[in-house]
Length: 454
Image 1 (cartoon, one colour):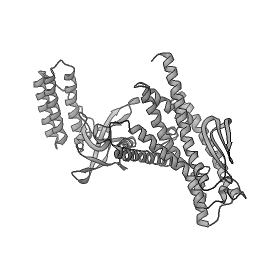
Image 2 (cartoon, helix red, strand yellow):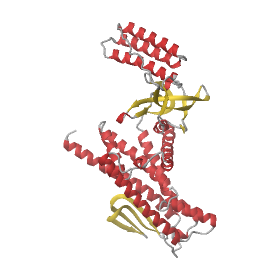
Image 3 (cartoon, rainbow, N blue to C red):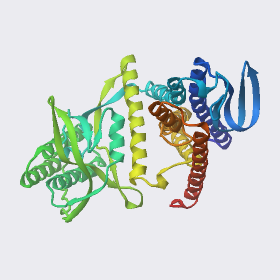
Image 4 (cartoon, helix red, strand yellow):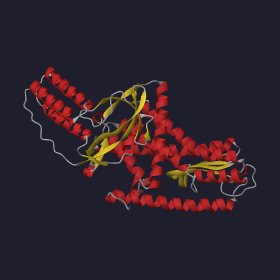
């Protein structure tokens, strides 16, 4: 891509990113707005953006404005934060109506996430199921108990409802130190021995028929290795396959002697599956482990899943499952922050979010402008779901905090005095601003030194 084209494309992606982000804010605030209007609450202003006004008009009792900074918005209702004698003030409406108004923004965000997911998924020719179709060559999971046709139900403690859950489950797995003399490790090493031989032959000049015969011999050996039950049997299968492939390839490949290590590092966990109609637990399943950045062990899938035929029904159901999957992952991540599983460097503020959007766009541009837009849309889908979930947390200044006071009102049968509730929300808002400021500073430092403040 030439320099001028790259600049134009980058600007276009930035504009698209801002517009989608503002759409997220608009949909959230519109949830409050439309339900407030429905219940007869007086809405004083509906604004998209923060800071100085760029554009404003007034219709009826409500001012509508677009503001300079595309970082938020608000729906200002009469009696939202203060006492009011106006019968149309929010504070004077029945508590059940106020509850709906407060939660409507978060609800709209989840619905928007579903719509975005449908837009992304409708571009696929088929959808991914949770049933294993085939394994990669020398896969770890096939050496430790999983089979083609198994339907995944749970990986570790993480329930699997759709293919997206599989990736999330792997992301939550912890690396373990396991016995290097373990039988599944032994089979994995035998598989690698065969794979190294096969890989070396693929670079040679063979006819299509010769390469097909070699591949069949290799695949047959791997299949036998997957289901063998003793080390002696694994050795026999490995040696026989090496000999058969050498014969077909007219080579004399000799494998390196297996290096025994008393300990290995693996992403290992129990997996619940449906096999032949029955639910069973396969214990100590190893997922493919390799060294990633900074030689850190990294986990990856080593199997493919069966496709789900695309139609209107499956588009709706699979999009709903995938959206729910993202919602659940957000909850799991939030609980991880509370329990200490995740730290401050796992949180992104405005700067960190912008950096993620930029990276997603750059990766997508390698495949084309449309893919870059899809990547941005996917990140924004996660953001809108995050916004919906975080907003219902029972914290002061958030919608969930306001909802909590309404729950208290229902329990004690009278509202908490506005001066007390307002003070708590103000303090919460100041703490929230300080937290956002700290996270933003941490994002900036992370960009500079790669580690952040903590």
